[in-house]
Image 1 (spheres, one colour):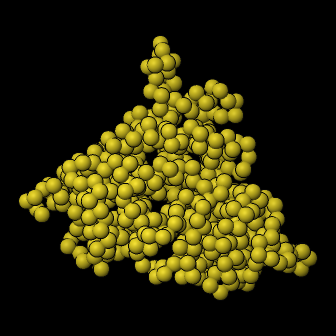
Image 2: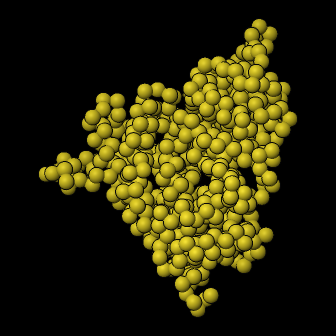
Image 3: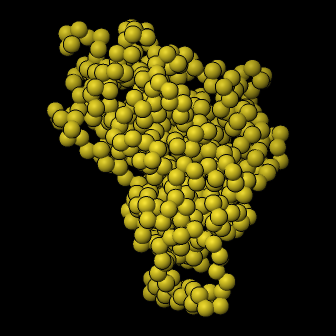
Length: 506
């Protein structure tokens, strides 16, 4: 069987070579493509990507410009690497470039067919988008759930305080992940899915991490669609295993809820959480079913836990790496909130330095360094160059936030750049900083993510001082990252909390 697969793979590669030679000799190439490196036969520019495509593409852009062309196997790829080009892609030509290049990994269990992140701009996608914007992530609904977030902050602080009492380090990313997971599960299912020290939280985090890694992994099936049936790298096979585990959990939750709803004698006894809302939507819509609920849950739990916890971990790492910035945040909290009073979401508006720290964290460590790939629904012209129909279009958010023509000392953590007259925001209107994307494809969960990151960071810094595990000096911290759909810290951050209310240790 293995020999047969190798032979078949070789035949397909030879077929691709023949097709490439035919196109080279007889085909009509697109005129006016943006400049780019000369592609190799068959593989094109695949080897130019390296282990960190965001950094490799940023380096190539210095040679070929902010709009460039690469040939990744059979896929013509246009890369935008400046704020000006990002605006062209995400705003000026938003409608023409709002399609999706679907990576093979997310075809596992047909996830892409119900995912708001991966669906093309169809009526199904618009209905899901409307559901998110008008019913799930509305300001009214988020305001109404403030008490739940307060509860989760109390639980997080209680967990950290237990470690502080014995001088034990905590995994910052894991603690933030558990808090985010339980917030979402309480909102969705009216239950907590994990305890602070439970293996279930670690297992769920590992599952989400693997899903993100597989979705972001360079895959021959994406560059040579003819190879998809072979799944030569096993990406789709592994993704299917991970997705089945998530679907099993979601199916159990849905079945339990359907059984309980069937036995209810009145609507007032319902949970009225997100699951109830979606089950009502299934009854009212012939185009929305159980599989769509599960795909939406994958979107919400993957993005809502991974990106939020990763951003919080990076923020804490940068503040530990630069203690003078941490001292400024804590001083601001002391002055505007005080001791003994928990931080409220309404306090954030009076904490400009905290908000600057969060913005600078998004700048230094954009959660999605290469925005989820767009696809040209029609051919368009940008700055005199042609973006052909069906081309894959990438926006390198990482390159934009490292652009020295926009940012002074772009590789240095400087929250002060966002104070005073700086009006740059992260909500998709300022293309110098687009951690959530922009245009019609902007992340619908952004309003909740912003509330959670600010609230968690403020709560942890108001209640505790922090020191790096093992007595490491801030300048010796490992600040490297690892590439995936999200940009995670390569070495998890472990730090020891010191209770600020305990005068005996101050």
